[in-house]
Image 1 (cartoon, one colour):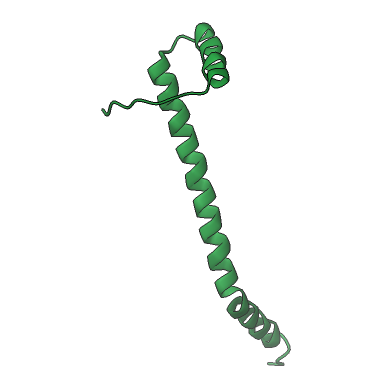
Image 2: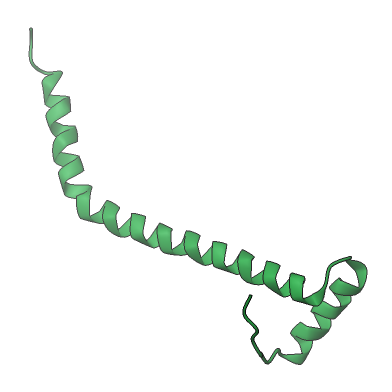
Length: 77
């Protein structure tokens, strides 16, 4: 486990303290949970950006393949 020192804005700290006074978890656990949640959110954002970029890269090829499949329906067998 790593030890860190951080500065927290007063209003954020006060809100966290109010929440912690009603919960049965330590401040340390609360901060760990917050960081874990934020990391998950950021991972989803990064993945979404990657998927959007890759989707844009293959968009033209996908449209060509779709057109080829549609043209197959036009062929009388």
